[in-house]
Amino acid sequence: MLKSQKYRFSVIASAWVVLVMLAFTSPLTLAATDQNLDELKKLTVTSIWDADSLRAGDLRLRLHGIDAPELKQHCLNEAKRSYNCGQMARDFLRSFIEIGAQIECQHLDTDRYRRLIVRCFHHGQDIAAQLVRAGWALAYRRYAKEYITAEKQAAAAKHGIWQGSFTRPEIWRRQQRQK
Image (cartoon, rainbow, N blue to C red):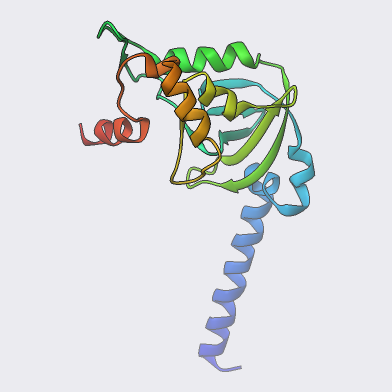
């Protein structure tokens, strides 16, 4: 073999070793493979970070198709008084799903933060739909269309954040990064 061929072979072999090591050392990579999707169907909730992010053991889950106020985000009620809508949205989810609850999830994708994008159900009810109907999350139109009707109904009924005014969560996050 020529010297350049040996070098090229060495680089390719090294890259394969690194890829194999990553596949076997990352629980998220293993959990998100097609062959392991069946394992994601029934999960036990171990924590709820905010209204669209939760954990099941080592798995970080992001509910598909919705965007909820961030934990530190404030909104205005109809009397124009500030309240922590992020915490209230999280509290609504915690009242709907308790820690230790069994949920059924379908893995749809993995985001850039290595969270599993999932559609989850609790007692047969779509968790994301419940959040949107209650007014504690918005339809994330960029990623899904299925919750738009529920959002319009929540807005018309002035549920949750629709009782007053608010900044859309994705805009609020952008503003926080610019500070």
